[in-house]
Every structure is written in structure tokens, then in C-alpha cells.
Length: 119
Image (cartoon, rainbow, N blue to C red; front, top):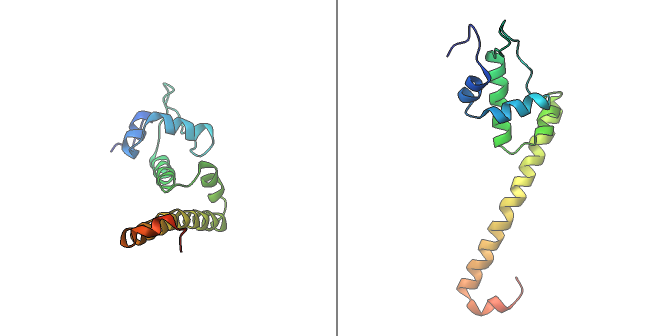
């Protein structure tokens, strides 16, 4: 990895495992700071930009909305609240398929029960 002169946008995106489009979008919405430019006008990303981009990508992969990522930066409490809400949402989304599987197992054990309401 070359850090002395910095990386281009394409190189940064490639290192972070993404494409140019999200990097540019993160700049537009203020999640990723614009880097300094070289004498020829090209962006020169540094390690701090790569670390920030990797953090954003990880949070996005976990399901954190971009607007919440910005809010998480301002307070530890905000980050904790975002994670707690996401965890509750995931728990609810997991609970429904588990409940359905239990009902299906009951119907398979007692096929006549398919005509009756659950329970």
C-alpha cells in the first residue's frame, strides 16, 4: 500500500472493497471528508480516510442507516442507542420466522391442525 503520496479515489475504493459511487456519495452527504489535492488537482486519500471508509462500510453492512452513522459520530450514547435499536429490530425479524417454523412443525405433526387457528 502506498501512503506517502496518498491514494486516488479508485485506489481507496478498491482497498476498502467498494466502488467509486459509494465513496462519492459519502462525500456528498458529509460522512467522508474530502482529502487534500495534489498539484495536479487529484485527490490524495490518507490512512485516516481509509479507516473512516472502512468504518462506514462496516456499519452499512450491519444495517445502520447512513443518517444514523452521522449521528453516531457525535456521541457514544447515540451510537449505543443506534446499536440497541438495530439489535431489537433484528431480534423481531428473527422471532417471526422462528414462530412460523414452530407452527409448521406442529402442523406436520398434526396435519388436521392446519385448518385451525394457531394455538
